[in-house]
Image 1 (cartoon, rainbow, N blue to C red):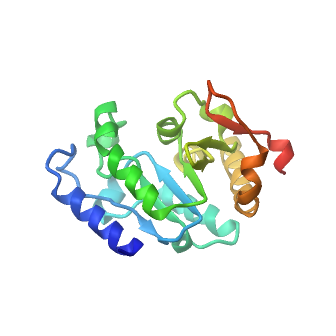
Image 2 (image 1 turned 60 degrees about the vertical axis):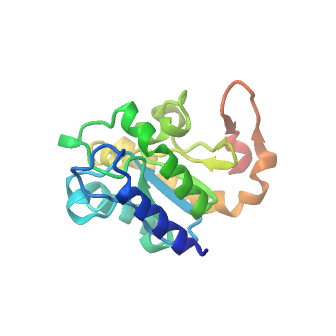
Length: 206
């Protein structure tokens, strides 16, 4: 079965899964290249995403597009999705139960895409992979979580609210192509710690 067929099958499973919460909202499965080197993962769909059934199409999505183009990429060359695939009422934060319900589907989605880098956007998405991490301290760093290299980034919505956050996010985006270039050697550069998720020494990589 091809990646495209696997993703389609997964999407249809989600549509028919009556146990999933938030079914009053539209399913926003994800979009982009099935062979993407980077998979951006947000928290959940907002109003515009729910209406269009596409991830990151509001103001935050427009900034994400600009950041992607700013490093010489195209939106269609990456893959974009969210932890939960339906909008919580009033754009509230997803509950732990909702995140847990969608977790198996996201795990399979990541497995199918098999990106070199998983880039969670914002605190909620970051803590899905890195429960002990802090977004202000750890955004832009490289972590190893299972077999994935995870680079947490500020959420574009937060960057819209502050110049400092925007500058930090822009700088982290500039590093992504180099991280991909060094992907094969990253395992040797990353320092392992059994009690914490793994974090690289930034000054050894760049």
